[in-house]
Length: 210
Image 1: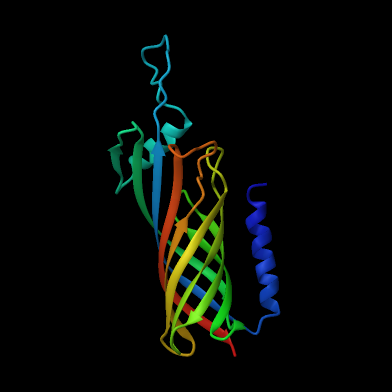
Image 2: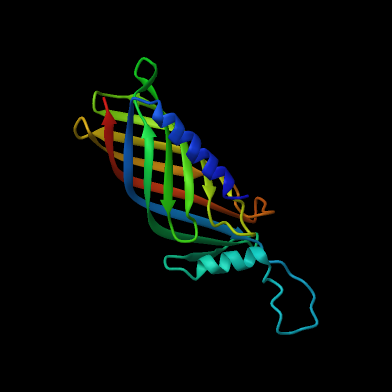
């Protein structure tokens, strides 16, 4: 059931592309920033070998802390904050030249992001503005679906995207964006116990159509 939503989103997007005159294929590198905060839970136990802090949230944080690039900081609230950086890739399709008004264009996309333990399908719906003939800025919501979330994480991730693109030629453009995750992906998490992911993406786009 968790994988049904991204499949439906992908099917709807591909169907819309059939009726579109222009689209582009995108590909590039994804730098993922995974931020976890957990508050250790203390409990009374008769077994001295038990670690009372090994709840589901603690296990998640410790798993990320063991990865390369992780840092752990103890906050004054006793929360343990973990930051992990992972590198992956993305492949996508986007509709283009959907004029809204003036120099503003609607740019719906679908992207597969391949990052270890956090593979996802992203569906950004962006509003692009032509700063110059070749230079464009864009922003909008991003609806992402984790493909391998498991039982401890939520599968849906809402984010906000901001980026710039530059047309190298009529067919090729360079794309850079920041994907700012807003959803607490920890199942049952709160303001002190959370897992959020952000992405920085750099890549190329090849334009098809008119």
